[in-house]
Image (tube, rainbow, N blue to C red; front, side, top):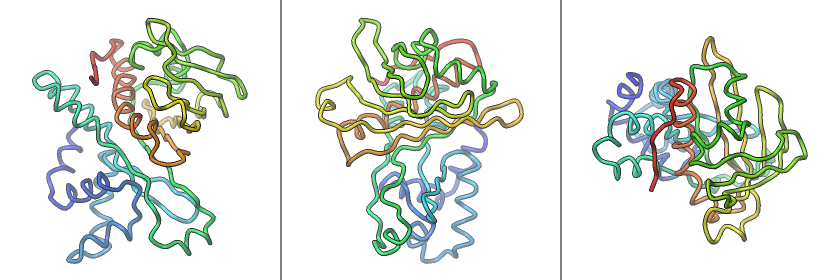
Amino acid sequence: MDAVFKALNDSHRRRILDLLHECDGQSLLDIEANFSQMTRFGVMKHLKILEAASLVTTRKSGRFKYHYLNTVPLQEISDRWISRFAAPWSEALADLKTKLETPKDEHDMENSGVKTKPQHVFVTVIKTTPDKLWAALTDGNITPAYYYGSALQGEMKKGTSYSYHGPDGSRFLSGEILEAIKPTKLVMTFKGEWMPGMQDDAPSRVTYEILQQGDCCRLTLVHDQFDSETNTFKNSGGGWPGIISGLKTLLETGEPLNYNPM
C-alpha cells in the first residue's frame, strides 16, 4: 500500500484520478489537455506512478490507448482500516465508477474501426498460483465466500450456460461462457438479475485475464459491451471492487472478507 499512498501524495496525480472519475477511459491527449502548465512528459511520468500503484490501468483499443481508474486499491485501504470505523465511507470509495466516453475525434474513430471502449476495468495482484485463482473463479463451492454470498452454477466450458444463485436460491445473474482457457482467460456474457430494471438490458461481457508474475498473479477484470449507460452498467461498477478484494483476501489469508456494500 506504500505505492498507493505515495501516488496519492501529489495534487497533479489526484487531479488525474479526479478526471478519470469524471470521465473514465481517456487518452493521454485528453488528460494532457487539462494541464496547460505541464509537458506531455510530465503527464506521462505521473501516469506511470499511478499505474505502478495500480490506481490507473490501461487498455488498447485499435490504435488508441485509454486510461481507466482502478478503484481496487482504494477498496483494499477501506477493507483494512476505514470500514472498521466508518462503513459509509467504505461504500463511497467502492462506488467510484466509470462512464462511457464519446470520442472527441469521430474521424479517427472511424478510421481505426473502434466503436466502443471497455467501460469497467479493474486490476489487482494476488499472491497465489494461476490454478488456485482459476479454481476460485470457477468453483461454485468457493464463490459464496467473495461473490456476495452467491454460488456459481454451470460448467466452465465454451458454449455452456452459467448462473449465480444467492443463499435463498434466487438467481443473481446469468450468462454464457464465450471462452475458457484454463488458467489464463475466462470470458462470459453477463445478464444482471439482482434488481428491477435489468431485465430489459442486453447482455454485457465480463473478461478475466490471469497473468503469472513470480509467485503472484495479476488479475485484470474488464466489464464491457454495454449498449449505453444501462441499469446494469450503473449498478455493476461499484460492486466489482468488493468482489475482487474479497477474492484477494480469501486466497491470501484463507478467510472470507467481512464486507457488505449496503
